[in-house]
Image 1: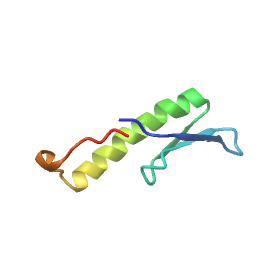
Image 2: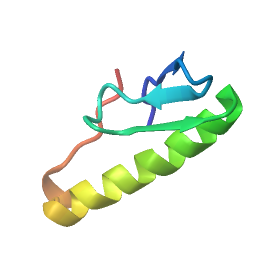
Image 3: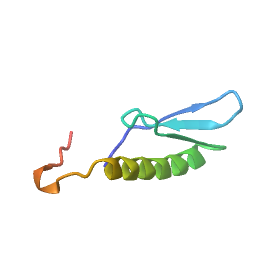
Image 4: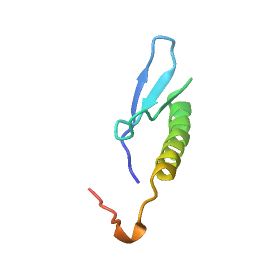
Amino acid sequence: MKLHVMIEKDEAGYYVAEVPALPGCLSQGKTKDEALINVKEAIAGWLEVMEAKQKFDLARSVEVVV
């Protein structure tokens, strides 16, 4: 899965990483690399929570590559 991540430096000097395709999915770090590592964990958690809320019927799903 490929997702776009936007990284910006905040006023406190931390790097904030946000995933626009996943509402509310964001993280931060003292460096860009740390922010990327942390946002990967946030993505995994976001997907786990969403899957727990609604089970997907894999027989009816397809993967779309853009």
